[in-house]
Image 1 (tube, chains in turn blue, green):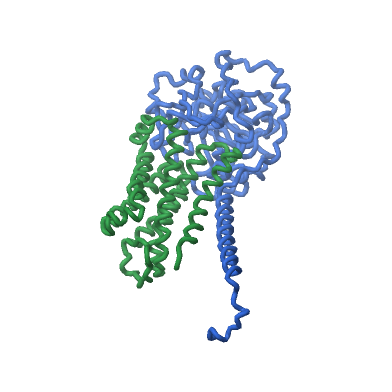
Image 2 (cartoon, helix red, strand yellow):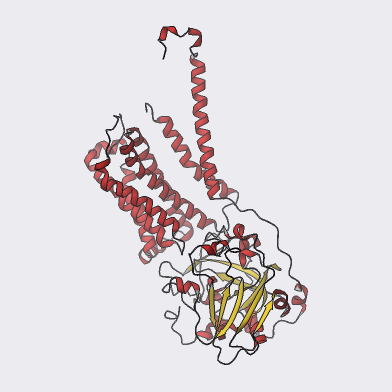
Length: 332
Length: 205
């Protein structure tokens, strides 16, 4: 550094300019850091982008004009709840589908390129006529009825979803179960190329689920192929999934490739993961808590306050008889 | 560092950016499908992040000899408490519908809630004694002893997070690993001490 007297005085920065520059630098640092922080926050919390809608289901008109399924009117009364339906965007962008992501907001973006055609569903096991259906055969079994069901997640939130589909019993009748068939086992696609998070080991793949035969044959149990009159989007389990409205949502296995009629109680993925926390039955029950959190209340998506949870998710009148005499604390 | 006021202003402003964005998103109805869950999760994460950041000051200071880092520790700790209070308020107002009996029931029935309450409660005496006046009143030794409560608070917070996650425990475990590192440093610190640069007006443990 040169001696002070060798610097010409014209090169000394005038004080006002020095202070202005300091203010400028400070403003720049402040603004720059705020932008960086904001940008980082946004990267971790991006608001959702809505993409195009899936195609409308074929044959919807036929479903409306055809006589309703010849079930007991007391049961059919539960086919359409009057409660406000959850908006389509929420149903299709807030999902637990670990095959794509463990982040509920991350499933839809991760699944958007999933192609659900061609698809086959192999139905067999203890059946007289085991059959492999392709998607079109499946859709021909019955016009897609509208079923507006409540859906309660084990985590403590719930939705009201207008599914399209038909009772699982219609499918099972086609393959003619043997009398030795006491349970129905379901299996999801296993293909890490198409379901990238299957490369992780958060759960044992493929995802499996099961129902007791009388639960599977119950009219409320739905094989769903659409939502709001459109084909199921990938995030919701395209092209075909199960809906069992009186049980926690994880029993509603998605993207089903295999259904087997079996004699013994089949394994179920969440029960494998944590047997004390997730049982085979997993009926919605405010009196039986998850070991770590309470099941007494739920957050209905769209509402501000939590609401009390109903036994069997409000379907007690239709399904409680299936469990008559069972200790629901033991058979959780 | 001659004058920490500008750096502290930068920290203060940035620490409020997440809150500003949260409020903006709330106003634009952009909090996602489950807004309460989003706010709970975000305020909880921020509280934990600030808590861990406040715990990095001492190791950084001792490893680099830059004593001026102490200027930021109080602010980081208070922001942890602030976001913790927002987290608790959201829970109390929306999850428990302003029911105090509801809160008590939950706290003593759910271990993860008890742990969360504990973590926040332990921060209260720390927040109350964070002022310069209080530091003088307590004296360095007593103040230092009181503020070791930050360790059980951080441990409780991390376990709280771990217990509430359904299956993907990667994030809670990552936080636990960071905390473990920060605590391990303190356990083995004497070996790494470097001669510190003198700083006026900074609190030192």
